[in-house]
Length: 380
Ligand code: V47
Ligand code: SF4
Image (cartoon, rainbow, N blue to C red; front, side, top):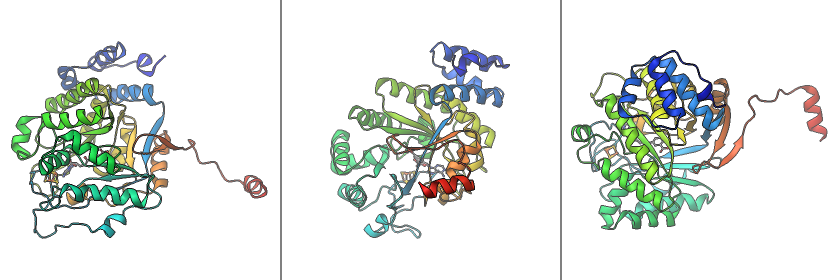
């Protein structure tokens, strides 16, 4: 018997969603919008049951580093506190040495994302992958969003297939999910009119999946978008995963208002948890929903493990994008703290790489060190 089959719910809207999902039917946009108004704990129970049917009690994370090689960007999205125009104060471009400092010996994944630099050529972006791979060949490289891929197409005047082929030859393993924002033309015109929209983002990920390059997907929520637009975004991704499977994870990114002036404060923890649960219920064919603790904060991310999330990203190191927008979370987390956070939520920690291959499974509890065990280990 599955957890979804066994679940007994009190709320009629959530129960109707459970019946649909149990019979293999996907939720519609109307279902999703209605569910946002349902009792949050009931939503969480259903999303948690769906997650447990897929992954049991396992929650994965990576020991990774985020590398943001430059914040110089030729665009100026209204929600972005990270990017600086060329020559502006506070702009930076890392040297090869600074980039290589990010390749710590213990990491297994590097996540590379940055601005659309005004003077860099495609080769400069390829070099970054080549350098990190040269320093640590076993490293999985998750690099460059669809926005950057489209920029490389324009720089080289070549199609996305060619650009992705060159990146793969340099050592790229997977694409991150950034740059999707919200698949709503209304929001795009208002907040990021210079940047690619839904059609091109989805096209690039479809091409990558077709070439065997897996990827992630994101949603930026908590600014001017509506709940209906959030749900439609999840449905568009679900449709792409049906046509061209290849997503590992969906990451709802909680907008950090910083000094953008777009909204006064970040979405509430309740809204975060509802969005995580809805992601699990609506985007029903994505393997993992990721609770990105850098933007959610550690407490909400831990709670999200009972609302459908089964992935915590990773230890991350020096994150810059959310912290430029004044995120309050620490800039990185130690592996031991991540394991403890998962255990405290009653879950089983699993360390993975960027391709979701298992590196290490941790027991539910740390074995207690007794004098007899220590003596036995010493004499072994
Ligand atoms: O595309 C920019 C977003 C994204 C803000 O694939 C902001 O595993 C919140 O995509 N508040 C980049 N978000 C980060 C990203 C990501 C993060 C973690 C894991 C993965 C993955 C991908 O950050 C951008 C944009 O949507 N962003 N500014 C802000 N103030
Ligand atoms: Fe540039 Fe990306 Fe920031 Fe937009 S969100 S300004 S493309 S770095």
